[in-house]
Image (tube, rainbow, N blue to C red; front, side, top):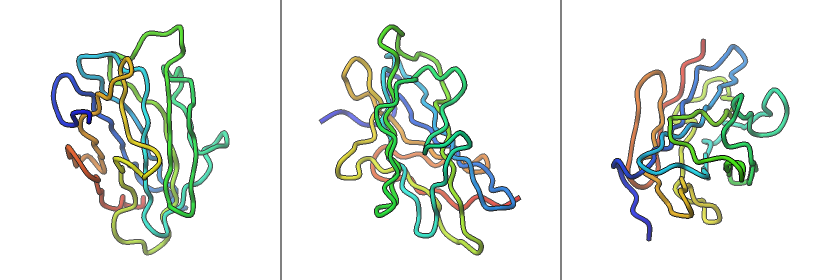
Length: 169
């Protein structure tokens, strides 16, 4: 089993839950902060709470890649509505080098219904089929999974990260 935890040799996976607009649409930005080893790929499972729905990105699809995305190879992009799971798998181009600097990978968008209370999203280490992983040269270098909402960050070494509902502007 791969070592999972904080440290200079591991890479953090970061998810920032934005503020809802008047229609309840919330941007959820995914980024990675490499440790000592370059990052070649990222897989992430994002689970939405009951009633929270994933909506299409402005250009269509589940995921809107960041401009000049250094991980342009989309290996997996799926919204499993029955299980409320978004699976994303991203990799670097074969001719590119791995990431060595903190980098935004892209954004998904969720809709939070009126009157919603509780936690809108979590990062799951595994959904039973797909494992949240940060990879370097075929090795799992996953460290902390961090979720930021309104400037407060929750971080864990194992298990699930739960965040509070973002405020509606």
